Length: 208
Image (cartoon, rainbow, N blue to C red; front, side, top):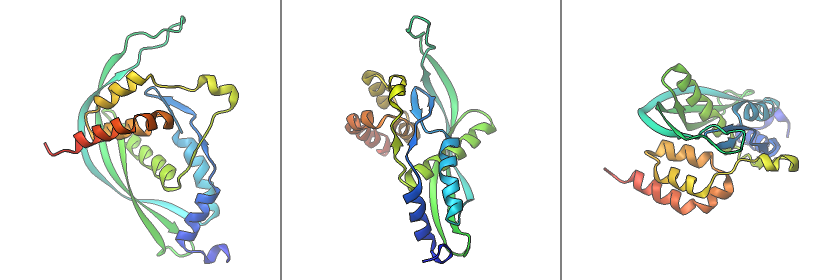
C-alpha cells in the first residue's frame, strides 16, 4: 500500500510505531518531565513523513480559580534546602479541540479533545495551557514511553519523598491540580500511591 493511499487511522498507527521513547529532560515543581520542545521535535517530523497535520480547531474556556501551592526552598551549598514558600496564582483550565488531518484527503480526519492547564496571571498562562495540552496529547495519544536516563545521569534523577508526595495528594484542591500532580509524578511513585490518588479523586468528584 502506498503512503498516499493510507487513511488517517493507518497513518496515525505508523506515527505510533515510529515515535521513540522520550527521556524526561526538564525539571519543574519538584518533578522531571519531557519538555514541550523535546516532545514536538520527536513527533512532528514523523507526522510530516506520514502526511499528517495536527490542527487546533477550537479552544474553549472551562474555568479559572486562585490556588496556593508550595514552592520548594532553594538548595544550599551544604546540600540542605531553604524553607518552602507559598505562591498564589490563577489556574486556568481550557479544553482544546484538535484534528489529525490526512494531507492527501483533508476530509479524512480524526477529532480529539484534550484539556490544558496553565498557571499565572497574564497571557502566558493561556499559552502554557495550550503547550500543556499539545504535549500530553502527543504523549498519551501515541502512547510514547519514557526513556530511562543514561546510567551516568541516574544519580541526578529527581525523586519525591513519600511523605511530601502524600501531603501533596491529600492537599490537592481540585481535579486539575490532582491531574497535574499525577502527570508529573514518577511512574514508580505513581504506582505506589495509586490507591491514595484514587481516593482523593473520588473525594474531589463527589457532589458538594
